[in-house]
Image (tube, rainbow, N blue to C red; front, side, top):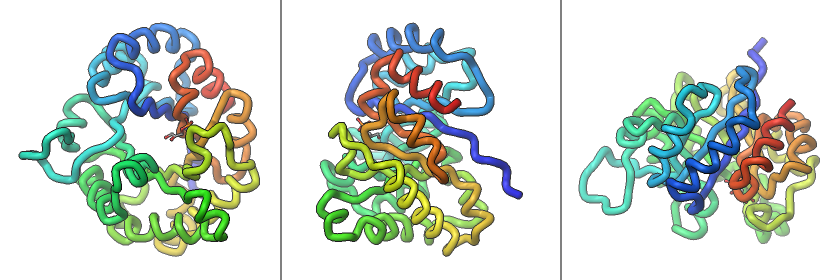
Length: 255
Ligand code: 13P
């Protein structure tokens, strides 16, 4: 028997909340959420707000921090980029890789996600690999194929020993920031497809150990139903993670 996967409630602040707002957010949020060891709460603040966030969550080991993006190189002339070692030094434990905005707004390729996941694992941090289809791909009945195409090259590039460190987030592009959420049944079907792909590469037992989060217009009023679906191990929240009371309600929805 594999140990049950612990729910992960993650907030991706994207390009929101500078250092002062980050400090205010945690001053309001932390008293609303009691420490608990049966779930993880994670924030991905903008890099310039990372130090303020880290200071604010000191003494709260139940709250972990990550960065929204890294470069795969270890250092050098890469203006605007962050290395994994720098993120780790700042206190990051996790890194988002392949978020749909990186792929669709900034043109990040599957090959780049492969390099980034490799760099994150080599640097001892946890990659949160985001995958998801556009509305056109879903309408063309290619949702599952697209997600598998995003996943497979990454899975092929990591070892069985590294797999337990990986977290996957299924985020349908059409549900991000739109207020339209995948139906619980659609989310469950796509999470099953992700786990099937993991099992095809690494076997069923190893696949069971990988947390798969859902993201895309998660709100306090739909979080519990989404998280009750089989194979949905938590949520990656954008807009609703900016509001302390709203995100505290989403954390509470994990039970
Ligand atoms: P929204 O929750 O704003 O739809 O964003 C989801 C997301 O992209 C999280 O990474």
